[in-house]
Length: 120
Image: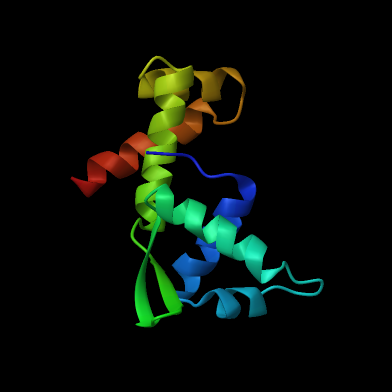
């Protein structure tokens, strides 16, 4: 899955939260100073080219854009990219790194294992 820049992710979060939007509706969600319509239009077209958004024509010159990749699918894809790129495709390597860097404790891992086993 392709990655998003910070600005692209900001726009996608608005589409994920609100569904289909016109560019002007997207612009209205910003506080002042609002980004220019042309800037937003360019970013939305980039997101469409990347496969995150699609559009439907409302009138010959008016389009409504909507997400075609869900937030959960993007999260899973992003996590997979990180695991593949930095941990040699090893989720165990990720967990080991988290334990070594004290981001998660061994007790937390035990609790997680217990919850997973109870859920089965």
